[in-house]
Amino acid sequence: MNSAIGSGKRKIKKILLALTVGGALAGCFSSSSFAVQGMGAKSQEAFLRMRTVVFYDTQFSFAPTNRVKVGDEFTCTGKVMLMPTWPQEIPFSGISFFNFFVPGPQVLRKAIWVNEKYFQFNSVVLEKGGTYAYKMVLQARNPGTYPMGPMLSMEEAGPFIGPEEFLTIEGTNSRFTNPIKTLLGNTVDLENYGTARMISWTLLTTFVGVAWLVYWLSKPFTRRLGLVAAGRKEELFNPMDRQVCFLFTVGTIVLVAAAAMITKAQYPVTIPIQETKYYIKPLPPEPTLIQAEVTDATYDVPARTLSFHIQVKNIGDKPVVLKEFLTANVRFLNPDIPGNNWNPTFPEVNGGPMKVSPSEPINPGESKTLEVSMQSAEWENQRLTMYHETTNRFGGLLFFTDPSGTRQIYAIADQIVIPRFGGGM
Image 1: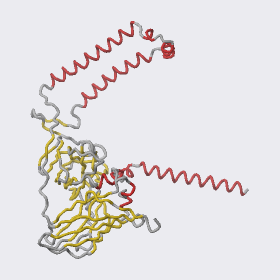
Image 2: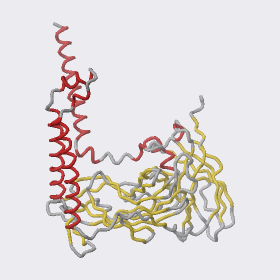
Image 3: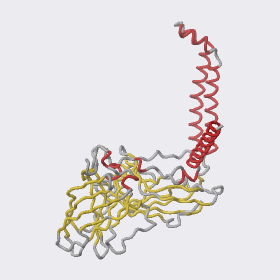
Image 4: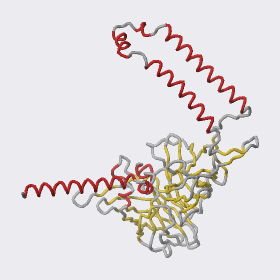
């Protein structure tokens, strides 16, 4: 009796466990769960995100509500710095394309400006150490909730993803249109332009392919396999087969030629695809307030703390302070500066407080060695623990500022990090 009761309990536990796992899996595959998973930027290596391209001053016009309607336009603005010391293991071509990442065609990219120069389809050539301001104009297309943000794609190096926000697009796209005016003065809707032609040619060419497969697959497979095994390959083709092959070959050539002639007759004015690359001059450097150099850095693994020393000399005429550190879309703020609080509209990840010692401002002409310490779980959550990688170095941007609000950005591009695994190591 007890054995039967115990067996029943075990079955109930298995059923509950199965229901729990099933519910968890269902939750994982629900649309709402997908909506909060983001774009997986942290799957990239730490040195790739910390030492190559850093996005900052990113702003989305839809913040803080993060809601728009289908057809509404919004902007994404900010700046991006290409680190002056590029990792040797990552090729650098400088040939880049400013883009906007979003899972699928949920928004339209209407226009892009880089350093106030308009671009839409062309790539640009950027410099190491250069800073570039961008502005993207986008339009909501499909309803739903999606992660999105700026992205820089570089030839041979891959995409570099900026900070992201989740945007909810409300309404329906049943009446959404995307009209453009061609160089001939015609207005077409890109939402359905050429769709009927594309479907027609797809069906026609699919029919040709299916007919080809039906003809050959209708022949006895085993007998033909036996002919191959017996070395009698010449018997695989009879005169009828050769005539069919000839007809398919000639028919395909005629079909392609006819399609080209019809298209040429309907669209006599065309231009080739443009592949010009534009050189973009970096922004002028910001005012010089300090001279700085990082002397050493350590990462305390158990405490999840990155610490480094930096020698700073104030060469300006006003006191300066270290305000924040930004790396891989994770932002650390110095809480000792009045008003330097976290703003919920920041699209970056809140890394937490950045302790700076000594905390007093650096006066004009004064030199100090600052100890900077950042204890945060985000080093692990964002997979920025450099000791797991073969290039045990880190990078990022330090923001110094004076009482007037003038700031200077100092790039840490290639600083080696010594990991500490605890007192027992």
